[in-house]
Length: 399
Image (tube, rainbow, N blue to C red):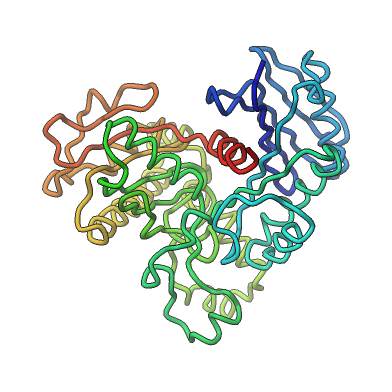
């Protein structure tokens, strides 16, 4: 029997991920993904639900997020663990943007929900869906505490020099323009796990955390506090990503508007959905990138070079910000699984005290050191677990 079952919900515009987590034991007992919510077309909605090593599926129309919640409940019923009988303690929600308002996990009431919706001006692709998921969960589970955990919270107190863009200060203040950072739940969780893995005090460590997935970001963490991060006002800035360009001259926007006649929305779509690895290589999955490179595809090879070059550049910058680093950690899908990317990113950095052990780097598994024993900078792979971090933050707040 789970003492404090927490349902973690991550609502997207047309999808919803969920996990029922035992935060005390650090385990997900149920995981699920619902896709094509409210999407018209010949292909129906679908859901997958895994519990006790068994999969339960649903295919059919899923009109909206309220319907998605009902599909989720029906899958819990089919699996033999009705959610109403789990003693659900609380629901934790991933919310992408907390703006300057939210620096901690927050119990959701009508006012908080309204503020999350208002912050959609800063995250129009994410916050509306996050708010809808919360709203529907409040209706589906009356009397159960709903907690918002914000992607931006870990970076809310960045030093002013790191958070401030050099534009007219009045315009910036009026329109809330600053560096907010994202993937904060992952960066905070991983940086804390690093201290536990190494058996060292978090306050003693200067860390560079590389969250490399379809979305990618890097942070500099000094003594447990974030002092720099690559993503900015939006998740578009920083590293090259699966479909996002990352850093780009702002003048490119004006150039494309003037010479190509592209609208703001078209440029937004280009930089967020048709750039990055997809734009350079035609695919965004690194397994496909590797396959294309093996076949002699020069575009894929260049895409990988650009990707790794950008990561190396940020490592160098954050070594300067921190005055050196004790630890560099790879996490998320690419960071945890792509040994070749890790090797390419760190190749030639021995003069900076970074010495990768090829045999250790080739191993697979959980949290582990992949640098040599005599490396001044310890290099690790630490799997991220944002859902567990959300569950534990939810439990701590409600309890």
